[in-house]
Image 1 (cartoon, rainbow, N blue to C red):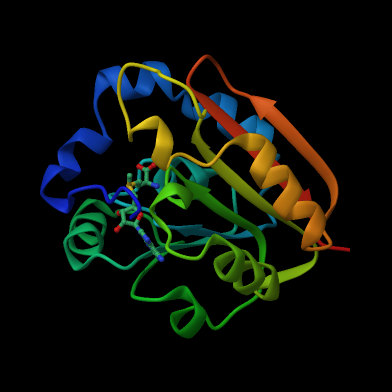
Image 2 (image 1 turned 60 degrees about the vertical axis):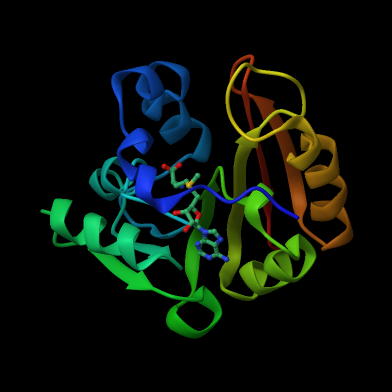
Length: 183
Ligand SMILES: C[S@@+](CC[C@H](N)C(=O)[O-])C[C@H]1O[C@@H](n2cnc3c(N)ncnc32)[C@H](O)[C@@H]1O
């Protein structure tokens, strides 16, 4: 069984504490967003990354399977270039993107291999797949260690999926980013 974030706790996804431990500006520069890019933030929650990403990209799809999250995202949205979509991205996302991003989502997925293949299908050539998640060790909060996916497992999966220019970055003591390019 995977660890599922309880949607009732959506307010926890944006707090001063989270902003300290998960610094948005650092992530923006690591993802290398530019104003001409189309982005998908899959499992976007209430828009912790969606809204700041919208300021530095052309268009961003905020996609989540949870109705509660998308309702809240829509309430908070003041950006013309944020497109909220509720449901499975395979069906709902009818466009190719330059960046396919997830934050603290992959440990919730029943089939990460299939999700990754589907994500790569939605990428433009030279587009990047970016997974941010908890390091697989005790960090004092977050999903239990046995439910976490290590950065090395993600690197292995990205290699097996045919991605190139794979990079693993430890953001701090808690979070990592793994990114890879479709070519
Ligand atoms: C811990 S929250 C993270 C939200 C946001 N990415 C953030 O960092 O603030 C995980 C989110 O992933 C969503 N989720 C889980 N599986 C998903 C899937 N297959 N497709 C889209 N969203 C999914 C959940 O509904 C939840 O909103």
